[in-house]
Structure formats: C-alpha cells, structure tokens
Length: 291
Image (cartoon, rainbow, N blue to C red; front, top):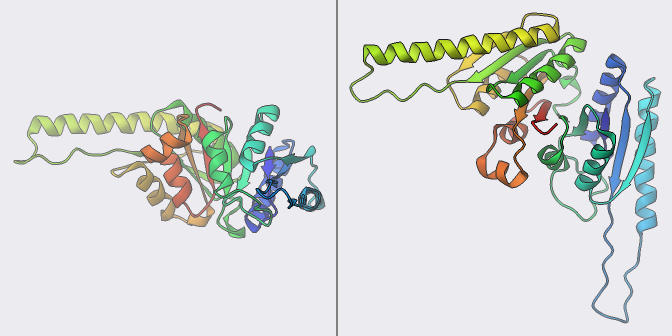
C-alpha cells in the first residue's frame, strides 16, 4: 500500500483508511509526501529572489513525520517514509513506478497546507496517469469501513479487476457486494415495437443479465458471499450513483475500471471513471487497464 499525504483533513482520512487496510490485510504500508517550491529569477539584475526551499523542505518533513507518527500510534508499522521533491503528481507517479504498489490511497482533494506553486487536484491527476489501482477517500469519518461495495461492470477486463480488488476490500470489512451494469433500451420507434422487435429486445436483455450474473459469481467467490446484481436502464455514471444512493451512500465504496485513456481523452470523452470520481460523495476505487 502507498499512502500519498499532504497533511490536509482529507489526507488524514486517507491515512486512517490506509492504516485500517494495512492492519486488516497485513500489507506493507509506505507513506509519501511531495513538496514543491519553484524558485524563479527576476528580470531586474539588481534584485535577488530569496530561496526559502530549506524552510519548505523542513515543513514538508514535519508533515510527513507527523503522519507517520499518527499511523504508528495506531499500532500499524510503516515500511518506509518517502519525502519527495517535485510537482506532487509527477513525484507520486515516479514513486509508483519504483514501488509498484498494489494500491495507492489518496485524499479526495490533495490540496493541503503546502499548496506551493501548483493548482489542481492531485488525486485526479494520479488517477489519470497511474498504472496501478487508486483509492480516492472522501465522505468523512463515517464513510469507512464500507458496508457496501458497488462495482460497475461493462464486460471489460479492467471492470472485472476493479470489482475483484474492491471485493477483496469488502471481504475483510464484512461488506456486501452489488455488481451494476448500465443497459440502455433503444428509443421506442414511431408506431411502437413489433412482436419480433420485442422478442429481440427480450433476448438482448436476458443475455446481459446472464453475463452479469456470471461475473457476479466471480465477485461472490472473492467476497465469500453471494453478490447482488443490478441491470439499470440509465447512463453508466447515473446507474452507479443511483445504486450507491439506495443504501447508506456514505458507507458505500464505488469501484470502476478505466481503459487506460490519457487525461485529455478522459476529459473529452467524459469517462465513467472521471464522472464517478467527481460526483461520488464516498470513497472511489479506480482500476486502470494499465495496472
């Protein structure tokens, strides 16, 4: 496990989740904090830009040490603490390439006291580019541990792996699982459906339900209990959020796969993973096909 922290309130919640997962699973926990202070020269040769990088580094080290101390105070061992220098997204991704973690855990915003010279969501940037699963934690203290795992399924390998990983988390937390697939019924033609049309529509829906039930059986094996299924006539993002909201939403972990599109492509296509990440109130697990 790799916890990427910035000392913010969201990051503290992510640390509690990382600690809990490490204790429940026995996985080694690494903790990282990235700091970045860009020093620029001025156009006036008589003026000198003061370099306060030592102060920033000292503050960053304090944030990291405070986080490690809090984790160890909960009787959880930290395998290694990593103080990283550079733009946070790049620094975290580089560490992921080095460590190859089974799961990266981040807070929902990723912007804390040390914002420095960059703007944007670290969590979203890591999700867009990481070649490993990422758990984005949000929803407050009551959001963890999850009571429900709601996993999106579109028949892809990345969706299957996302469901299996989320199911493993659900298994150690005693959660129930629900596998969700969006299925859009074609618009009703002028004049209505013929008998043959209705037969074909029924067969197509039955095929989707059969395939979904087979995938749910695999998830059930991982979780050690039978998983439910929902075939929802809606947009994929809405289908997932709708099912999540049927129970205690803040106790639900949403899991989706992504097919490895770059950040620009995902933003342009409005991918399900990006939409769910932005809209969900509780924790979200994103599993890239490049993981």
